[in-house]
Amino acid sequence: MYTVLAGGVGAARFLRGLSAAVAPDQIAAIVNVGDDLTRFGLRICPDLDSITYWLGGVVHPQQQWGRADERFTVAEELARFGHDDWFTLGDRDLAVHLHRSMRLAQGVPLSVVTEEVAAAFGVPIRLIPATDDPVATVITTADGTDLHFQEYWVRERAQPPVASVQLDGAEAARPAPGVVEALMGADAVLIAPSNPVVSIDTILAIPGIREAIAATEAPVVGVSPIIGGEVVRGMAHRLLPAVGAEVSAAGVAAHYGDLIDGWVIDERDAESRAAISASGPVCVATDTIMDDVEVAASLARTCLALASDLAAR
Ligand code: GDP
Ligand code: CA
Image 1 (tube, rainbow, N blue to C red):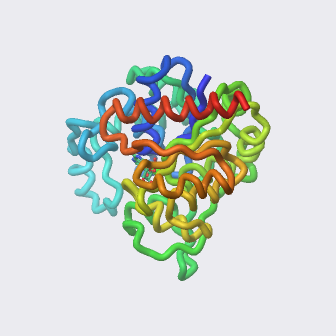
Image 2 (cartoon, protein in one colour):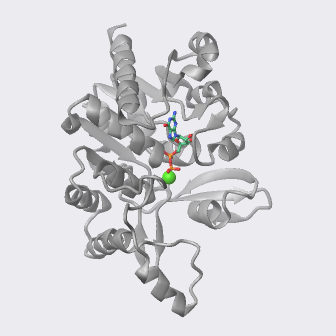
Image 3 (tube, helix red, strand yellow):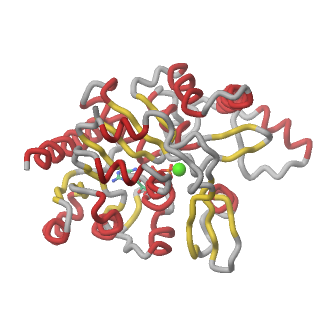
C-alpha cells in the first residue's frame, strides 16, 4: 500500500499520476481538512473536493479546482439577499456540499461521507480526511488579527503579512479511522507537493499522525512544491517564512527535517541535490511539473523507486 499526505491541487495532480503508475486500489490519501469551512450552513472541504474532482475526471481544466461546466444560478439568486459573496459556490459543487452537510447532520462521520462522495464520482483510490474532529487553520497576521484560512486566502487574497499559523482544535482531534493503519501498514509514505504550512503541517498537527510517520517502517519520500525558489501555484512563498523556512527545495526539505528519508526535487534545482543529500534526506532530481499525466506518473515512479532503494538500505 502507498499512503500519501495530501493538500489540494498539487496533491490531486500527483495522485492522478500515482494512480496511472500503480494499481489505484493500493493508494490511500490522507487529506488536509484545515481549509474546511461552513458557508450558508453547508460544510465545504476544498482539499477533499479538489482531489475528488480531479480523480473523478470532472475538474475545471483551466482553474484546476471546482467543476468543469459549472453554473452559478444559486449564487446569482443568493445575491438578492445581500450576502457577502467572497466565497462563491457553483451549482454542481453545491450538490456535494448539500449531501455532505445532510449526512454530517445525521451524525455520520466525515470519513464515511468522504467515502460516499468519492464513490459517487468513481474515485479509484481511498480518500481519508486527516481527522473527523472539528479543526480549522487559523492565520494570525502581523497586526494580530486571526483569520480563518479561507478568509486569508480567498477574501484577503493572501495579502496580509503572516505572523503565525495554527490548527485550531488540534489538541483534541484524533486521526480519522484508517489514518494510522494506512501509515503503519504502508510500503511507502509519500508527501505530495502540497503547501508545507497549510496542507502538510496541518495534517501533522493532529496528535498521533507525526508519531505514526516516525514509527512506520515504510520509507518516507516527499516531493518539493518549490521549483527554482518559486511556487508552481498558490501562496506557499508567503507562508514558509512565517515558519522560519526558506522558500526553496532545500528549505522545505529542512523544514520537514527527520520526517523524510527521501526528497524529490525538480531537475531545474539539480544543483542543490548534493547539498540536500549531504545534510539529510537522499535527494533525487527529475521533472516535477505535472501538467500532463505522463510526467506525473513518471514522477510517481521516481518516488517509489527512491522509496524501494531506501527500504533496501
Ligand atoms: P491547494 O490546497 O489547492 O492550495 O494546493 P496544495 O496544498 O496541494 O499546494 C499547492 C502547492 O503545490 C504549491 O506550493 C504548488 O507550488 C505545488 N504544486 C502544484 N502543482 C505542482 C506541480 O505540478 N509540481 C510541483 N512540484 N509542485 C506543484
Ligand atoms: Ca488547500
